[in-house]
Length: 319
Image (cartoon, rainbow, N blue to C red):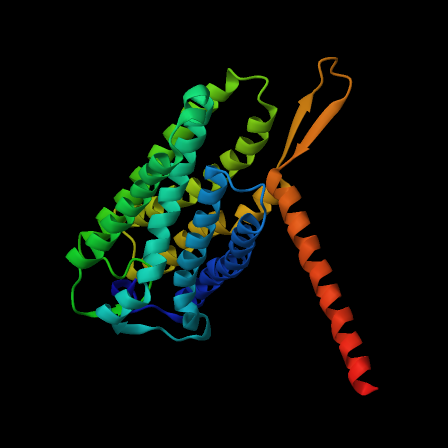
């Protein structure tokens, strides 16, 4: 982005700011929404399965990732954060690791659900400690790879501090390609899971769980495919620098929109099925919909209790 800033006129500058306001709004909503998913998961006893834990970890990682988007908030007020690349790398280390954990978790959730569907009998017999160690190693390995790219392609220079700034020269290509590859692998895994699920017509609970996961993956992965894909496309189009400048801010809308939509998807997804007579339609709410409602009720009840107790103490102390 920094290289395309030279010669940007006021129209393109304001247009870029307008586009950037959208991912900023998505990031703000995503930080709140994914925090709620994380807190709901760890606060609900029924959400302690492997995939629920991975969903919670992914949500926390997305919070860190979207804080990286908000690093550029001064741009909305006509300012740019141009700093030394080393300081930028330090600021963005958690957002970059959030990207690694988020993409790794989507892949691991897909593997877990695919194995539970295709190899359901063996899945129940797995040594959970060993199994969780394998899934965790996948996530950690991808994070280490991104950390390696940050170190290998570090160049002392002034940068516009944003998510791709730590990757100089060919590092950007490796970063974009790695994210594309891991998300493409996730798509293949979820497709295999879908094929396996079709042969289990009686697995209503599994269908209910996986429907929301499918939507999350489609939205999330679409963002990760569109954003780097469109940015790469701009490198092969004969555009003026100011047009590429605007395009870069337009492209980041998709990945932030996909991440921020998770709470809405988990809360609103429903699975519909029919009884054997097909006279009565059954609607199975997403497990997160029920958990979120229960979690919200517990919080509101706790708040009301606290207010009553405070008032009681106040009355006693007044007397």
